[in-house]
Length: 214
Image (tube, rainbow, N blue to C red; front, side, top):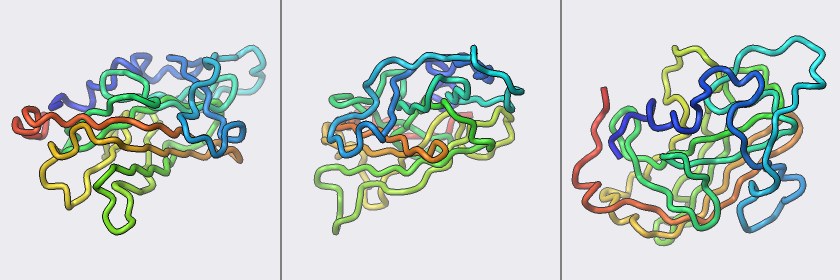
């Protein structure tokens, strides 16, 4: 869990900054078709990249899982190690680049041109027994960098879900059921992923500590 986040996501975005014509494929998450579903909404047919109809100039390069030339807008989420986050998945605790505990979301998305270096995810996480006074375990808008320049100050390739201040021992989260809700705007369409997962925070890993990686 103490691996540098810059290397963790290499299994998913090995195509680097060459997302002109795709990279990895992922399931479509058009929320217009699946709005209100209580299960993960990113399990429809596999995405493919379609460049046959491209007549204009290709936009600026996008990186970190963004596939501008995908056939239609899609969103899929992955965990550390490359496993897709769907109902029944295990979501492991890990260290962020600053040496703090987090649960990492590794997105694959695309099918539209945001004409920007960031997209914004709306993320809500609820954990049984840790939603104090009606508040979510985590609820925030998370900027996710999709540009290819390396000057971005935040974490690259991951949307971090930090732990609430009241969770002083992350091992308490091990085995806890959690629900995950993530949305992003793709032009005038909202893409959504919902998943019921199980948190993984083994005590022996937590005891090793979370330190900043060089």
